[in-house]
Image (cartoon, rainbow over all chains, first blue to last red):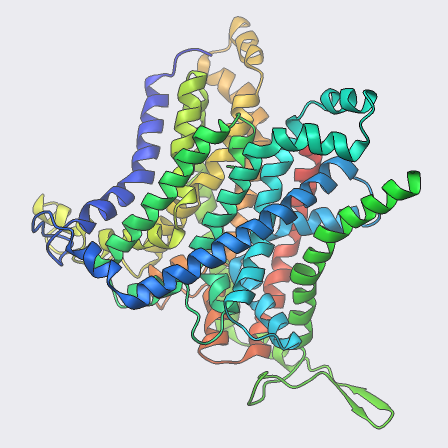
Length: 264
Length: 294
């Protein structure tokens, strides 16, 4: 490839500036002593203290982290199974429907998924709360987890497993001993992706929750509806910090190749 | 041995298949069912579709909700507005994402993966927070207006917040990584020797781009467009937080029908019609995706 031209450099710079400027503004103003966005009142961490001592926010964060951790674990297991089915078994009765169901949740508007899941829980008479949010999150995040696992499974060299089988390993043992260890980094990224998607979700949670169980995004949303507050800036910065930390960690663990970077 | 591994295969297929059937497919059938019901007080707030009277099973399917939704101009307008917003923001994103992806693809491999990482970080971080970040920038007394006022470019604040412009900014901003990644993946995988050949044969740099690179990248463009166009039609957070009352998108209509009006059957009917609109692009997207994976 020839060197990037000035136009290439400009596009990269402008694009990244657009992506990062709002985030930078948010982070900077979370340290602003003044309540006003337009006035810089000096450096202060008072909004962080206020956010952390806000009982309702802390309660929401606890629910969100618990839901995200459990649903991400479920999603990783289900997504991996789905990926194995899609990549290794491929053709079976109803595989078109299966592949369709695996892709559709990724583009389906959240409102539609939220409405349909709410109606199902109500029809089945299941009490809505953290459990129903977890089930709903596991369902839509497993499809993202499946994409991550699929891209890794496709990259895997089949001759390694063949060798194990030739040396007398039963297929299942060969898969567990050869393929699974090679997929570990993908498990980590699939879990982290599912975790952050769940942590971030507002719409599906709002539909599938019951009285008393509000996740962190739901708390933030009801605060934002009244306007911009520096306390929300502080909470947002904390969440961004967690996400960036997780991302950098997973990048160090998995060193994604060009292909899987599409999924991560 | 054969039958045993066959059984194992079946069990393996059954777990994710069953989960998706119960938690993804079945809910949609319920939405369809409840859209044919009528509203009532109590929980659940809709009439049951069937009733047993002795040995007589009576099924009542009520088309009233659909007649109501189709006949009411506000719903039609919301569908059309959603399609318009989705189409325009997809075009805007394409205009920003393509040069960005192309620029990144033209870098050295290590720089590339770092730059792509930078594009991915915002996609991973909370969408709600990223929309919120724009609120403090776009408000009348926000950063953007105070900057322009201080520079003397404008004499009174521009009203951007609660307008359609704000919706476009918010949607383009939050969905941009979804557009960049497929285009980048496509461009970085394309065969460089083709462009060199075109250049050797006398094509100018621009002509080589238009006649070789761009047509080859259309697959990535299509994937990216589908990835943003479909969910944006039903987008709720951005129009709700940045948009005004005059721009009603269908995602927000469904939300309000559910939580404010508590009319579940009408909300279900609106959802069913939205799904009917989405089915064609989703199926197209899917077949394209399965063709590329082969």
